[in-house]
Image (tube, rainbow, N blue to C red):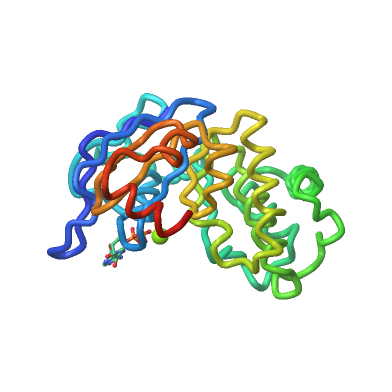
Length: 240
Ligand code: ADP
Ligand code: MG
């Protein structure tokens, strides 16, 4: 579904991604781990062109999205993204947050968008919050709304950038549970996370990024139990 070759990204003189190769298959759950500043967010942001790569190629569903003239809007509709900081629209209700993009971008009728929105709210366990504003929600509830909002566009891939890092510990589980159910339903997902238990349990493959390259990858359980590269060992010794 996604094919990355020689991906490069610099900010000024700083090279942040230094030749990333990765393939993500349909239905695969890929977890990305690595030290702070190693390029994990930049990698995800390049996948949906929130950042413009400086080199290399990315294919998504057979189309080379790094070519000029690509319709970025269509690409983004097919790739949902969930951020650490939720990024909900503060002046819209929960249901409006979810139905806005389908109405504006997909020309879905309001009644149809609201119906889909309510189905998604049911799925993330927040039906009763439909008319609440984001400021009245807990962090875990906000993140579940953000996931529902991304799903409303019926994306083919979901990208998650540390979706639980801003949450109080007691709210991490409810968000991971929603992500687990998505994985079970076959959603293709790329997830940057520090939740190693989740990575082990839900990930089909784990990528360890350091210094803008994939240093090591494999089955999460195996990499976590038996890291081969010294940098992976050092990182895991700090976080496990
Ligand atoms: P991670 O998500 O692994 O913590 P990031 O991808 O956010 O790492 O950042 C990698 C490096 O790129 C960091 O040194 C960061 O400061 C730098 N960086 C990220 N985004 C920008 C930007 N928009 N402008 C300049 N530097 C950036
Ligand atoms: Mg990051």
